[in-house]
Amino acid sequence: MAINWYKYASPASFYTLAGKMVPLFTILAIGLLVIGLYIGFFVAPTDFQQGEAYRIIFIHVPAAWMSMFLYVVMACWAGIGLAFNTRLSSMMATAIAPTGAMFTFLALWTGSLWGKPMWGTWWVWDARLTSELILLFLYIGFMSLQAAIDDPRRADKAGAIIALVGVINIPIIYFSVQWWNTLHQGASVSVNQAPTMASVMLTGMMVMVLASWMYSIAVILKRVRIIILERESHTAWVAELRKKGAL
Amino acid sequence: MNWSSWSEFFAMGGYGIYVWGSYLVTLICVMSEVLLISRRHRTLSKTYGLIHDSYGKENSDKEVLINTEIDSLNNEKQSVKAASSTEEIEK
Image 1 (cartoon, each protein chain N blue to C red):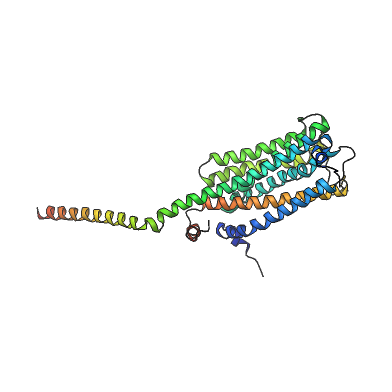
Image 2: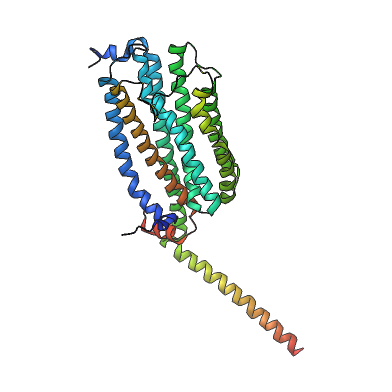
């Protein structure tokens, strides 16, 4: 059976699909969060170098990964919206931005609280930290630009250009620890090397990464549903929903 | 098990302020994001509720009345116009 993917490019059918997916991903997020925190605090042992302070890793790394990943996804949707003029793609980009910004802020915040006991400073202007801060500004720039333009379709186009130009920052963040001599440590997990972490710690971290994924999907789908309703309020199918009292 | 007591758990080996500072702020951010989204949804359905009312059953009779009033006014105008035009023709 072939699934007609184009069907879900229509805001009306995607609205229904997303509505079914939100509770599923919420449950998955909560479940994984409980397991991840349990492993992180009760199963994973104390680090021989960093003591208990390393337990920040269970939110720092997922937040940092999500901040970069969500930016790439946002730029992809924005680019598709710009190229093919599909309304839903641009709405997805708009829905992703606040969650991405939140994870970027959390990566910086937890990194700062980790840096103080380990490096002896809250902040340094090194490549990794600075490029991550620029990422936060890119998210904020994208959101403020969209908020400043009244016509949503023009806001989509202007936002897409910021999002696409800003993608250049993602490889800079990722490779910053290799390209420059930074205070930030190198990658803990990479594709072509064995992880430099104890396996229990790694398991806990990966479960927390999965939990952040599920959380992001749930929140972004919930937000895109609201954006769809806001923008499609003049259409017949929204009027139909309104009649049924299903809003 | 890593901890022999709750106080040891909260102390985090002397790093309590850093570890809990991270987790607490994360919790606040996540909670406020969820709260903001549900509030945005509520505002939206309230706005739609208002739109719904103005097109809904309660006001539909009123609207019909207003429309018929406007219609009758228009008819009067037209008949006046018609009358004046016939007068002009007669002149």
